[in-house]
Amino acid sequence: MRFIDSHTEGEPTRVIIAGGPDLGTGSLRERRTRFRETADDFRKCVINEPRGWDALVGALLCEPQDPSCAAGVIFFNNTGYLGMCGHGAMGIAVTLHWLGRIGLGVQRIETPVGVVEVSLLSPNQVAIANVPSYRHRTRVSLHVERLGTLTGDVAWGGNWFFLVDGLPVPLTMSNLRPLSDAAQLVRDALEREGIMGADGAEIDHIEFFGPAQSPDADSRNFVYCPGGAYDRSPCGTGTSAKLACLAADGKLSPGDAWVQESIIGSRFTASYRAAADGRIVPTITGHAYVCGEGILIQQPGDPFPFGIGGSPA
Ligand code: PYC
Image 1 (cartoon, helix red, strand yellow):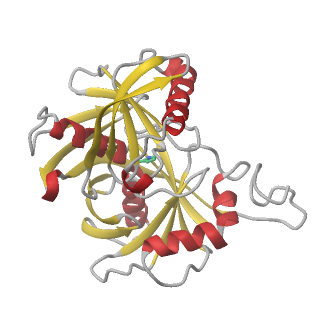
Image 2 (cartoon, rainbow, N blue to C red; image 1 turned 120 degrees about the vertical axis):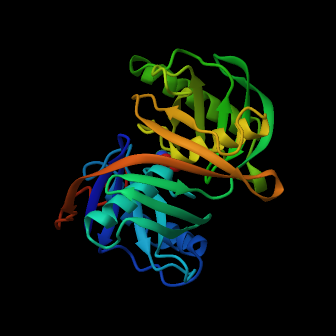
């Protein structure tokens, strides 16, 4: 199977360009279910060590069902499947341009949670008009082991997020371990207390926010991903969830820019327009760079064809 690697503001994406599983036809949501049920070893092979690593997000390109879309995509990680992925959509656009498959301009891409509009502004700069995003619950109180009682908002930005009010420790790279541990405790508490997204969806991303280090950014974040990795970028879907909360609180007006800095200091510039039912359509702009290309091989006798922790080893 052939792949191209890129990173978006530091966060890696691996686009499968040949040799992926045939998931048949149907909606992207149905094909994501088929992926999970019939080809999960493929996900493990691509993402798990020794061929991948925990921060990597995979992108399987598929035929779109919606004829207005240039491509469909199913994103996956070290623990399962994502709804949307903002940094990954930017990585796809830059990768397809690098391959000569698309030019600069606007493309529509279908995901399991809706269509996103991807504008390639230059070979390495991309703006994503994301799926409609919204705050689902406000100032939810949560008892977190070792941290005490916290509050936070539950919001949708293409994935489910819990946006914590306040910080366990300052948002610095030297605090990656305590930030990750605290985020995992928040996840455990959400599960224990049965706090969910709409339709009983699991809230699998946790966000902390603090002051930006750069004087021209509005905020710094730390985003804890479902499989325990932290997002090196400011997280496209996480920034969308943040915008939905800012909009709901009347703290950011439509069209105004919000500069979200990541824990590594990279940044997305974001804004939104109002949509139906109190939702917003966020636009997130960032930079992505192709950084590798290769073929994944499973030699006979390899005890880890599906990665460490995957079957059969
Ligand atoms: O950019 O939306 C994003 C994302 C989700 C998980 C990792 N990155």
